[in-house]
Image (tube, one colour):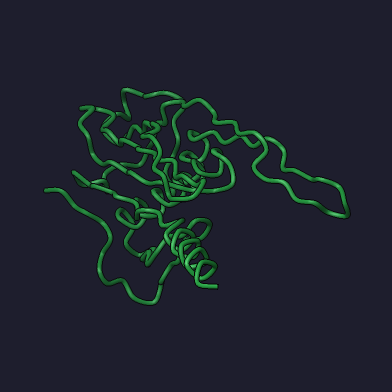
Length: 195
């Protein structure tokens, strides 16, 4: 009986420690209010195989392949914020254009058979190519495509709040498949501003 209790306690501790994602880290290095346009450097889509399976009525049913294109997610999010997305950098509009580049930053183990995919987005000036902001985030879903989709969403939510504070967003915690938002009060500010 004592042995079963110890094994159960160990399993509960392992499972309890799983799924904690780091909060997104957004650093703003300049005033972004002057920008009206965005150019997103094309990124390769991420395709994942089946993420899970279930037995329904004696038949094994699995999810199909999933594909996520980071450039499309970034583009859609910026359109939602009111930015005009440019198909290429237009010299006449370069002073008002931000360039977004996406990259995978690796992965981190979350415990028993689980890991988080980490992403980074650099935002640079279309005219001077100076770094304006960095967005680092991680996500953990059923597939790698889900991981990337979550990480992009979490990072872009905090980025949006940093440039549009009226959004009233504060992240309290992130677990494996959910983001716990508190929109009632905004203390403390999760954004790290760099002078």
